[in-house]
Length: 337
Ligand SMILES: C[S@@+](CC[C@H](N)C(=O)[O-])C[C@H]1O[C@@H](n2cnc3c(N)ncnc32)[C@H](O)[C@@H]1O
Image (cartoon, rainbow, N blue to C red; front, side):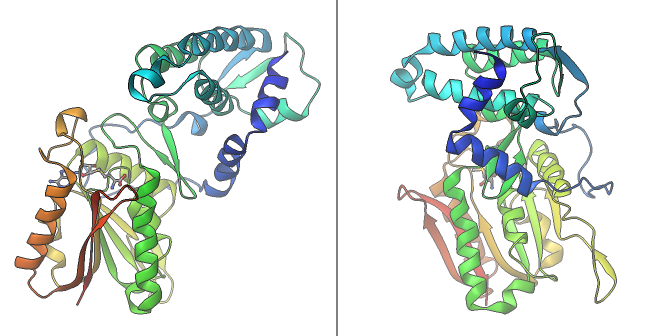
């Protein structure tokens, strides 16, 4: 079977199709504006599927890599699942097909065209040598797939992620739904200033901004400079910084990313915050570089609520610690009185 038919077969799966659909819906142009407040000490890596197709390989060489990668994936069997509920060979084969989709300039043409010969040259977004090493990292070092390809699909977004930044989890989407419910009840909150404490990749901040009105704004805060820079990268991708508000012809940051600890960067916004959400750390900091708080999510949630009750006494109502779908206290929400 050639690569085209392999890609075609795999692409019929619902998940794979939804990845392609997500992409076509979610991608917005890059903007040239820079984000203030964040020192540029790292350069967030561009996810593979957004890189220019500056590499090439023959179909034959790509097939050789694919066959090697499939053999490696098959060798895993159910051993990862048995040891720590990791992916089995079936899931790894699916990931391999996603990696191929990301790496090819035009995966769709492989699906639809019969014109490819074994010596046809294909344009790639990653060097074939890098693809060998990335797949070895995935299987031999168990590097999370999202870090291998550099992105995660979350709601209708595709967010850049890299080591040091938490991969946004599906259950976190609940926070954006909670905000949506609240602003449907009180339309004024749609134009208010919202805060996402511990923003990570910026997922929640971007999700909230997309349901706010023209005058709504979000401040996204994280202690980690890697997270702050990756969040800034994602904010730029979705063109949510420095947008012009036409009625007053003023340029405001729809989302400002700030590096600092919890409420510290908010001192200048005292009395202005309409709503605040947080998904604080829930695993020991030693497991993620750049994660500072030595505590779990429940303690951190309690800290945030106590702080809002004492320091901002009476400023917020409906202060809540919200459990995730597994019933674990994970999120904090509060609305301005
Ligand atoms: C569980 S992650 C949540 C990331 C993101 N909001 C999400 O839901 O995908 C918690 C985040 O809190 C950040 N964090 C830890 N301690 C912090 C602090 N003292 N102030 C601000 N952010 C902090 C971590 O760097 C991390 O990005």
